[in-house]
Amino acid sequence: MTNESKLSAQVPKTAKGHRPTFFQDPVNDRLMSMIMSLVTEFWVMRERLDTIEAIANEKGLLLEAEIEAYEPDNERAETRELMRQEFLDRVLYIFQEEIEDVQRGDTEEAYDNAVRISADG
Image (cartoon, rainbow, N blue to C red; front, side, top):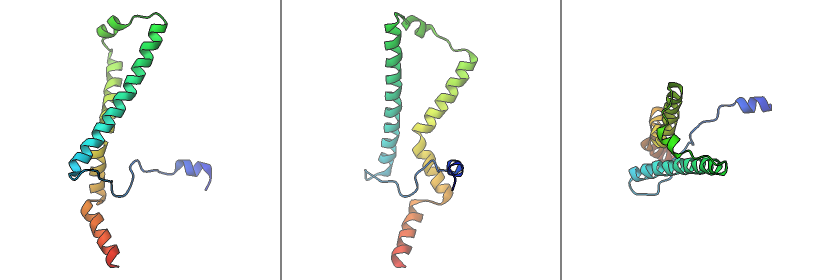
């Protein structure tokens, strides 16, 4: 296989197989996954904001009043909406993954049946 064909190969976005569980109720695992996604997103945003504030301060720029008064134009508002949707997609990823599992027939029941068939065979 050439490097080009390796690069063009389709790589699934989701891991296959049974998701590990940490709590008795799977809802808690989903919520923890969402919380950790939010925490990660928040921390990345906080670091970037801190970087911007530090650079602005080093350059003697006082931006607080301008930031508070800023009103985005239509193009910026549309870009923000796209970014918001991508953010929600990342945070709600766990639910999208479960929907895709059900659509493929990869339910917990199907997994348990496969394990039973394998054990019996």
